[in-house]
Image (cartoon, rainbow over all chains, first blue to last red; front, side):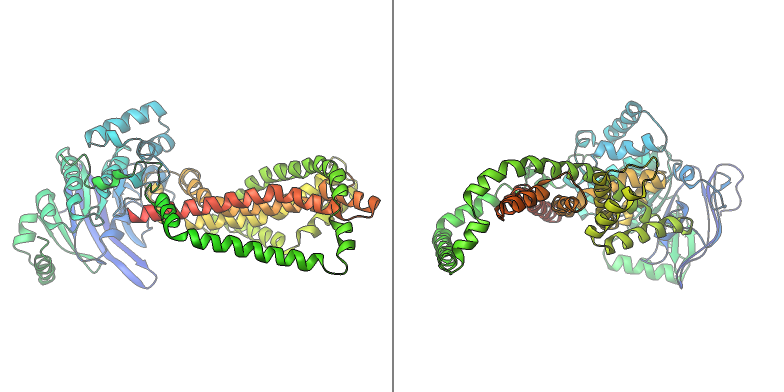
Length: 254
Length: 298
């Protein structure tokens, strides 16, 4: 399904290995993501979803394998990591907003300091994004005055302000109260509708089924099974995938 | 969307900048109702104990001599203005030293926080420095620099003992303050730096915009504690410098008048500055604690 693509390939992972000490977390991950494609990574905690996303963003150096973004190998030695990261947005489970800065400053910091944008230009871009996601009235607030859902939407806006080619979302709703999940998922749906290329680690199976072009089931550091959501969720081929989905259903989360 | 207003309206019941309006008055009204008797007992018992001590001391056989030597009212009145005028120098030493300490110590802390094998020499240098200057008594550094450097008569190097005594204070205190900064830097969660780096900010800009501002905010109270210590230790300059500051001036008058009261006057001057600073620290610490409690309650 994911043969070599010369054109329109946003991201490619080849035989990615990553260990923390003696624990091998990723045991050879291969994945190709096309432009505008939305990939959902599912699997139990510790299966390697987060590590995989952090490796793509170069927050964790890979031990072996290659990662290519639009044909450029980003895992090569001597690559300017700051330049690469400007094209890859990541949103974390715990928001990680800067608590000492207002919402607008959180959003304008990187465009100004990493892209060298003028203050006026960065503000204009930030306000446009905040407006689009219903946060314009919160622009002068500090993060701890916002609800979790609002904070996570600000974190998404902060990543979007860099105009990334790819967005990586790492269980962005896992730290939220249930009633706040929908507002964040709606933002992501809007991004998908706008054609954003995304790799999303999630426990929200209903959401994954709706939004994903392709679902990858990770198990013990490998992509055990991948395919269109209809097939993965209704007719999984692997025993472990079946068991994982069964446990999700039993937990009432699907 | 439609959820724009946010899901937790109770967050907004506390207007920003007004921490916990209900709590303060609550405690006070509780005091008024139940605690008035307790306060009365505390005040009365304090006075009784103080009066008993005063009585016992003033009845001791040597009291008149001690009183004459240490608590001479006239001596106090005549020496206090002179000493207070010289105390300006202590405040000057303090202000000048503190500015350099805050900058130099931050540099040391940042040097020590650099990770990766490339920066090992810089890290090692910073560690060596803080180990060295935290290990040597400040007064020894003041002596060594204040007497030592001017006697070398190096060309192009200031030969003023005052200059080198203040430099000694800067070198010594920077080691302590660097450790305070470092504790602050280490208390900023790594996820903050990860978020900044993930946005493409360089290591240096991550430090400058994200890590250091949060670190410094957290260590303001312990920094002020070191300020108090430095203000006191400006008296050490007296050991190598001829130009008198408050302590030296008090000693001069003491030697001339054969009376210790001027030393008490100098002590009082130091207290006038250090006690308000200490209270400020207490206030800042309790404010920080309150904010943390509000933050975790949210």
